[in-house]
Image 1 (cartoon, each protein chain N blue to C red):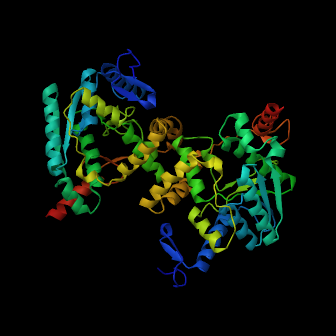
Image 2: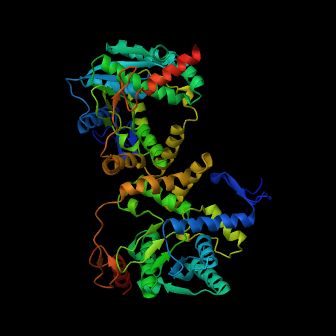
Image 3: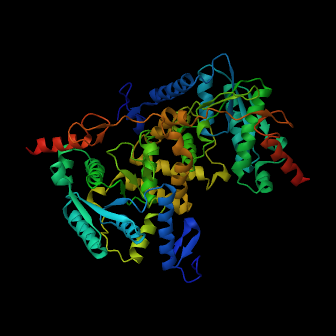
Length: 301
Length: 301
């Protein structure tokens, strides 16, 4: 198999693009997909400071790597979830990456902010770990961006992540979630940062190949709480469909973004207030994060 | 396990309803689901003549059986597709059923109407057999209903069929097909019969159990052209999801009907004309059926 661009021996076949690339041309293809994502959704400009949420995994470090090389003004944000060795190792990967590339990394610790790490939150709330964890991550990403005066948070969600989330929303027809599924969510309130996903055009296999070829040292293990998550079951369904029809995931996600999402966008927006406790944005009086941290603190007292 | 209604030994467990039934109470549950479907979508009244499209399979014969017992004025319609032994046997099952129940059965033969049976249509058009077959069936069902002065055609589509069709439409975000996915399509033109699916609330397993308990003699084999159809692959995906979460199919289809379908219904309807050749309804000048039969006749000449 030969590289589509230069005709040299190909290192990677991309069936859904009916193409193969040598290593240098694959890296360029990858960067072009990120450029196209940023351009198409006007995610951010070179004049804006971008907060890149990094977990230590391949996707978010690949994203940070591309954005640095493209000359964007980035700061990393690592959220320490306190999930045993997984958190210790993933934090070390982020710190090593930041040191090697001489870029700033901010660390925020869930145990300090909520009152307990994710495993204890799980016990106190008696809900799946991903529930309190996801809530805390979304809250802290936004608050850190505001505190640092950064208008936009970029996350490493890839095509497979987005297709799996969409699949879950569609199987239950979650009419609140569907219009919010987008590679870019605008800041609809002065105390909300823009949220963007510059890797939404790239598959998990492609981000893994990029990280490998760029010799990025990332944590390979999945979060121990992810075992048995429905998002993983949904990924397996989509993987099987992709095997049968290359491009199935791409068509599912992109067809939604182009054709169906506009239909779901409700004319009337949700009314947003500032939380009476912390001042962050909420649709209620006290935000879900403050309620969670109250619950955790009461249980530990 | 005990019957939810009478406490006797259960014959059938319905996990998605978290219930089990003895044979008589299951039959009553089944009839109640059909009654609920007819009521909810005002499918037809006892004063209307109903054309029941029967294939000889379990679903359509179970449907006909219930409607006869409920006292509706039904006529069966068997479309002879000319698919080798499959058609010979399925026709015989329909004729035997009609004779046993003393109800009228109309037979329309695709080879007479289109100029060739389905296997030849497949060859001539070089398209999947299901393409020309589905087109011919929809056309002939409507024309026979009009010719007989019957306002409504009922088909045996069950919950699994409807969920699989919806799944295919969603994976490709077919924006034309999505608003048309419904248990009841109104007659939007004087030359269109209403189309209804009174079994949409019942799973394939439930229609099989009904047919078994009612000793209905149906054709067990699938159409030979159905092998490898994407609808079957989609059913397998949904079956796996149902295994993991009983009710998944139900929630997917019913959630769509309740929450999402209204969003897809376009304000502007398609403009309908009468075909210049046959007078049946089409969105063009000459309808797809007339074009198909022209193509077949030219090829055979």
